[in-house]
Length: 82
Image 1 (tube, rainbow, N blue to C red):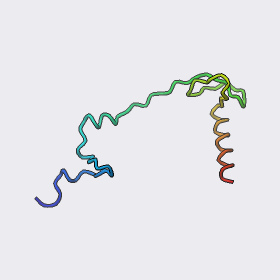
Image 2 (image 1 turned 180 degrees about the vertical axis):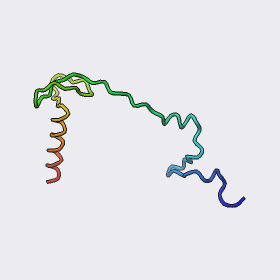
Image 3 (image 1 turned 90 degrees about the horizontal axis):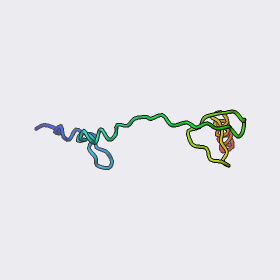
Image 4 (image 1 turned 120 degrees about the vertical axis):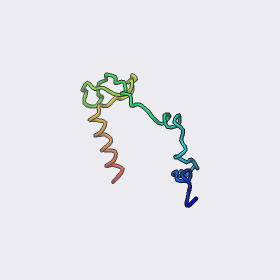
């Protein structure tokens, strides 16, 4: 036979796994479904607007709406860059 056999054509992964030899069950394990997150009603502690968040708010913990959360993250990023 000339050159590598078809079994040797598989892409070798750094951990030694040959992707050409995956079984159907192993491929199916990598298949996943994106399930929409459950949203919970809350009130933003900063702007006092009603909002929905992807976690169950706990009493005594501050909750921010998406706009206030993004503004806070941007301000933190500006502070880290300076």
